Structures are given as structure tokens and as C-alpha cells.
Image 1: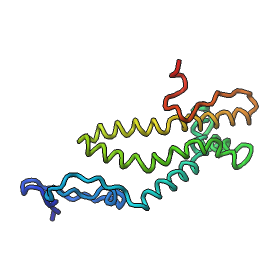
Image 2 (image 1 turned 120 degrees about the vertical axis):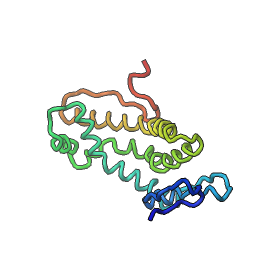
Image 3 (image 1 turned 90 degrees about the vertical axis):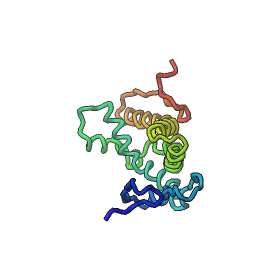
Image 4 (image 1 turned 90 degrees about the horizontal axis):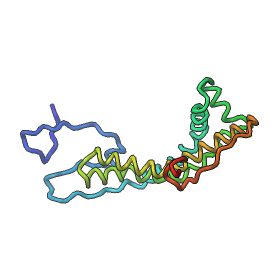
Length: 182
């Protein structure tokens, strides 16, 4: 049969949705029959550590791919594998050029954005507004560092090719893009 959620009237049938282990830890089912107000539940320590350590590791580990995407934005003819290989031109560690710029902002991205979304969703009563505000906050946190990473990758590629073309580096602490300060 159908599993019924306690606390709802008999006329409303709620089927139980299978949830991931992460979702169950961060968002336990709400009980409307207890009479308590909503409580904010912070994620468990392993989840915080996964975001604080695992998130930045993944962001740094994927730097060569991010750099290849930056190069692809300027080179529509080269195949993807050639662009990826070009990030390592000059040595293996060159693939990680600019990789440390987005590492520090990735901590709040991985640790804060999920709980912020749930807090806003509960406070505003609207998932749409919670998504919009959370997306704005994440963009504000990460835009400057992602821009700096892309500029460092571009400048490094230009240096390797000997073109002499360099773009000025943007501050990772400025949450809007180059050209908006005109």
C-alpha cells in the first residue's frame, strides 16, 4: 500500500518520497502534530567536514578542466582533448594555474549554501525565492575568484604561446564583472 504521513488529515494522502541519506540528515520530516515551531537543524559534523575539505579539494582538482573551458571560450575550432592537453603545456603543474583562487570561496559554497537555501525556504515560504536569493549569494561569493582563475589561465596560455597578450587581473573580492565599473 501507500505509506501515509502522520499528522495530515485522512482526506490528504501523502506518499512517502524516497530521500537520499544527505537529505534525510539535513532535512528530517516535519511533524505538524507536535505543536512545536519550526527548528533549524544544522548539518552533522561529517557533512560540514565534507563541505569544508572535500568541496575545496574537488574545486582545485577540476582546475585543468575549468582552464580548458576558459580556453574553449576563445577557441571554437580546437577539439576538447587538445584544449585540455594545452592546459598542461609547459609541465604537469601548469594545468592547475589559477586553481587556488576559487578554493577559499568554495568553502562557503559547499558548507553554507544548502543550509541557507533551507533557512530561506522555511522563512519565506517560497522555494522560488529561496533559489533566487541563494543563487545570488553563491554568485556573489564565487564570481570574483572564478573570473581571476579564468584570467590567470588565459594569461598563462598567452605566455606559453608567446603572443604577448595579457588581460589585467580582476580582484577576487569584487562580486561583479570586469567592464561593469565603467
